[in-house]
Length: 105
Image (cartoon, rainbow, N blue to C red):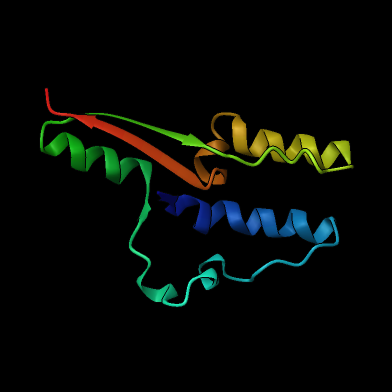
């Protein structure tokens, strides 16, 4: 699922980094979809966890970024992007993917 915090915080930072790299990207990431105003899979860690716990499910939620930035030639930018997407607490708003498993105890 998509991390709502990424849209609010991480993507604007990523746009600035891409600007420094000389690359242009979409002003609004939601523009990738035809019906961008009805994208319903956006979740955030706090709300998702509390909703599962309210119905008494055991839940594990984590962030993961599939980006490796291996194509990045500038080591400082690679390091910055790596820190943003892999290291606590930055990954909470910089990782685009949010995963969860829930079990009924």
